[in-house]
Image 1 (cartoon, rainbow, N blue to C red):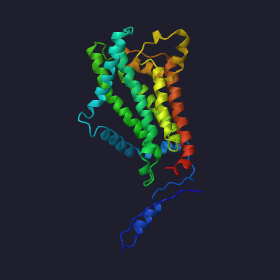
Image 2 (image 1 turned 90 degrees about the vertical axis):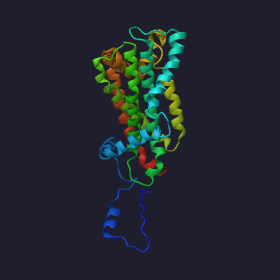
Image 3 (image 1 turned 90 degrees about the horizontal axis):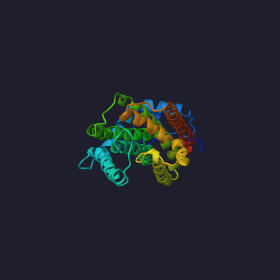
Length: 299
């Protein structure tokens, strides 16, 4: 099969197609699996050309997410706060975890917000193409548009939820340092990482949807290997290399440094964060671009 082309046009009985309708039908974009794609470059072009659609999809995702909820967007703030409350009671009061120079609740909430953002963005990006298969099989839309918009919608939720963190910082007299204006740097890097991971997982999930559930489990494991709720000081020396090898640790170091510590993380953390985020994004886009011509017939 050289290509897959499909145009569906409904013409009312007794009416003949006009020149305008014929011209529209012949110029309407269609999927063609034989059309060559330039890995990464094609994805960038498609995202830019459909930037308005991405905005619409982000608004749709945020609206649908809380449409039937009485509290609506308030759940974006309440969910991490309730989770933090439970973990604070367990680890802050029972186990007496202490973080030098910062209240444990601030340390805990920042970690929960970050890891939740990573998991939600990755899984939403990975499942977006399969979830929107009904649209993709009827209307020409570059599939990566759905994946990136899902990641951006998760990013929007994360930004809203950070209001809760800032409130807690003020209540605990931790304060909000000027470096908070640099927070978009680790947030953008995390978005790039999750979008790349999402495209990698989506490349397999179209044919094997169970890959998404497996990814959720793996992300939980990686999350536990990241000092989100426990201080790194309690990790035995022989296992510290595992923590440092985990790229999420570098992302979290940079994020916490900007949000409440008011310092810059070590240069190695910035380097590790930049290399992994850009590398995974390019790898995900390249892989998806290479396999999409085979995946489109499976949808």
